Image 1 (cartoon, helix red, strand yellow):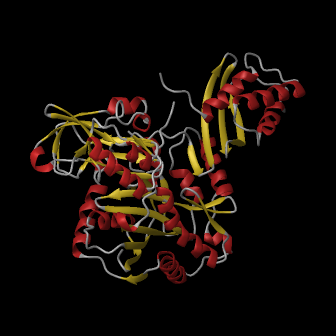
Image 2 (tube, chains in turn blue, green; image 1 turned 30 degrees about the vertical axis):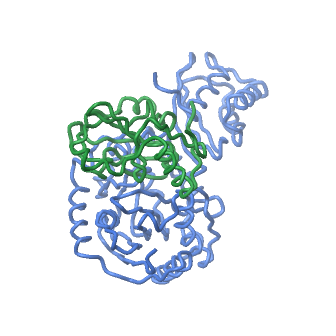
Image 3 (cartoon, helix red, strand yellow; image 1 turned 90 degrees about the vertical axis):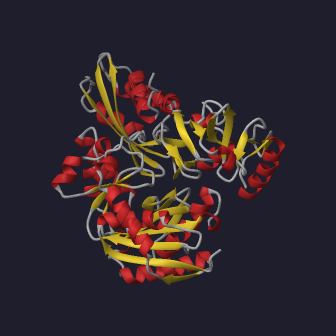
Length: 361
Length: 148
């Protein structure tokens, strides 16, 4: 294993370069390249989409254009995310033999210094396996992994701030109600250093602290270095590819159900046609239970207060057909619900379609 | 042959370093991820293929696989021309390689362009199994398959 880790510290770079820089160091890596950590923050906001996402299906391009938000496709997986100067990205570009073979252990090694940095700042962060960092049930940044050339890559961030409102605006969603729920869920289940501490910590202090924690975790010296001409040339090449229509508009195949807020929390939306009308559902699932649910549609359900009561009765309920059916039947009986053409089984089916969508024929 | 739940069929040829299995049939080779590779990768979330007809150099990317936590290449064990990709199967069930890595879950069919010069590292049969045993121990892998 190399004895020292090169640090490239790049505050205030363009949004494009904040993404292409780690791809460039990865693809330019040779057997003689030192293991490298890049700490980089963009000087403007943008949207980053996952490798296999379909930009036109996942991102509200009209909103992005109106607000001058560029969109870049990264060679790391996962979903679309809004990024800006409020995050300090921590990008590891390592030789594979210098990282654990298993992804679980690899993420632990990568996440430990992030957690230690937060903890020393006074934030009660912990590693939520496999690859989240949480503070008392709220996510404070996710991570991802990829292989580029001979390099193994791990990426994540130290989260000073996160613009949850804009995050909810840049996603293409089926309804404005879903957008509101995304924002509400981000408020409930995401946090930042600024929220936790009441003020934004000094960036230079955070950088030094993270370098110290990396050095301790890996048992190696971290030195501030420069990138090579080859790496810079590679970055220019990747810059060009990342802004090309061919790259941006490539057809994605990643099929995701709803919006993942964090490892344990997902937001899903679905519609089910019953005899009595269309039932639309937006549900937030937390660890397999209904955390929040709302019904709408063109069905009739009486008495008028019963819809809200039905939603309320399902909160905290395990998202299994038997449990849901039992709870819904109990609510129908207790509230004397009348819903012409819509049965408790229709509600159960509608919810289960959101939780585990039926397979296409 | 099974070792730590990892199936290493002895009738196939392997590029062990790249974790690729090869089934030769005349001048055509079918390639896929080994049980070890699909386990390490985890459940597939998406796969994209290079174009049919493209010649891909040894070690370069034939397809890109995205799992829940990782994106990476499916590498060419030798320089080859891509004849066919298994896109339709993965479109129907993205977990095919996690269920049946050696049959339905093949990734591409190729024609090697310079096999004699590039096959020195390939192994088969008992030799492949013995080498995989060492690799499985080194990687501490216990293979897992997805089921329906």
